[in-house]
Image 1 (cartoon, one colour):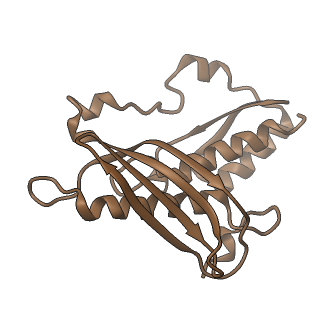
Image 2 (cartoon, rainbow, N blue to C red):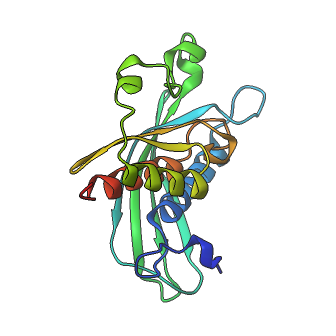
Length: 193
């Protein structure tokens, strides 16, 4: 079962970020079950590419996630996963490619995260109307670490701090968190402000 707080506010269906996290996690568990380093520890993997197809909504009952490894290479691991409802119907599927980051020369600098306020373009775009400020306050309350910095009809710019509640087991961005940022940016861009 799931908590009602995990339901999307519109229509009472399970939010796509929850489904994306299930799809990623079940694929990652499959990868972790066979891909170990020389000390039998988990490999430092990152999602290199992921395609999700949402096939039907689900609003009640238990969900089941199933993952499978399609191909394992030295640097890339290709997976497929699906989430089914209680009736066995596929509600979403994903193809995810994981990348073994131990093959990077310097993992600390090969992957970079933009810190809020670190880029002058982003600082210059910090323009919100009173409606935008109200929407931003709501977002900050609902999702601490996420902020609207620019908003106009058809366009929005959100920044998200990399916080523990947005992380996967290895400190990278969890797919559900990335989807939540993208989803909110799309919703805010649709407002006529």
